[in-house]
Figure 1: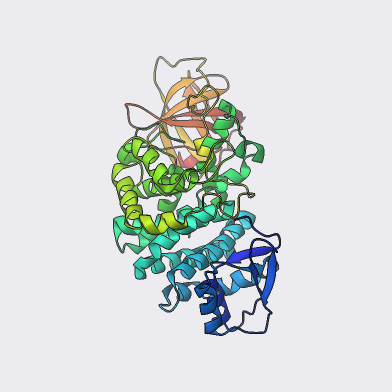
Figure 2: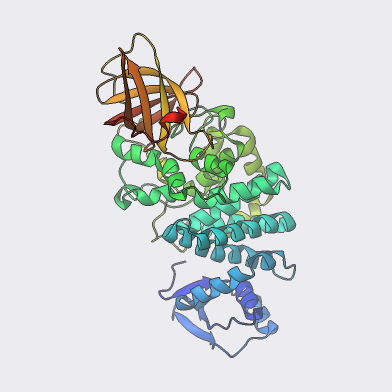
Length: 465
């Protein structure tokens, strides 16, 4: 149903929960679809429990509250978020809606302020509340899934992927709270890197060019780059973010990992992220129902999605199929917002997938040699504490060098490279242009664009190499 300008929809159950919060007093409006919003309750008038029961008994499924009040409402809900999700007197439908309101507010702060101290604290509080709520109230599940059908905006997508990721992880890992928490945090942060992509590309109706697709394929790495070095975001969370578009068959991005090379939590995010993306309407295709989405995803089992994880998600949906289908809304109430969750469905012109462009070597190294590398700027991902490493050189040109490494390098990282050849010794500064998993060999091939020669004694960390 189309949203009324200046109003936000809310269930009577959530409005009743707010009324019981002593410091929250709001106006309520009803909408009959003809006359528009009609005042039902003035602020300060108060409504008894029987009033809310009367609304539900008369089939009123939503009320309207002034959008100007939503910031205050969301703040009130967030302050007692964990307690509200554990309160047995609050209906599960209201809990799911409360989760959405709080999650959207927290996600909005992440979009606006990245990971400043306050937004990280709010993020951790939200995820802790979701994990505890999912573990303590199994009846929560179908309402979380229904929520996914109604909300499609940027901030909503982040919150929903986080909540559905926790839900699926609980099905797979039980009460492993650390893993559930990591999946929830990764779900909130997984698409931050798309904020750096021009909106015209994100909403483009026609197929993306190879250059545009390359930008899209780097967004997992850019998401981690935006996180910075905050110690509250663990190495496992960073891996889940980087890997959430990797595929079981090795045809994903940004690294082309496959099978067991992909972290299990990353496989969980891949399933719920794709499910929420393809069940929503897009400028270039119609929305799919949950059943249609599962049929499409089933055809990609063992190729794009991990078979075990997808079976668990299908089973979870099947358990609640009737409740979810009855209340699913493929158009939702936020279609006007930019959606960050679905651009991975694009394909470049010609219908072929693409990988980040690799420059052809201008000079092959017939005699393989090694170089010493020192990080100048890096993403703190898998090799925490590793300041330098030794690498084989695959090829070398005036402007670039191709390295073979045991671990991934990421686009934009800066390396200082110690090169000795023909009696000459020099330090060069280069920036990572691309990185791709070797097949069938293990390790990676990484293209480094050489930018300058460093003066003697000016290489940071040279003694460590």
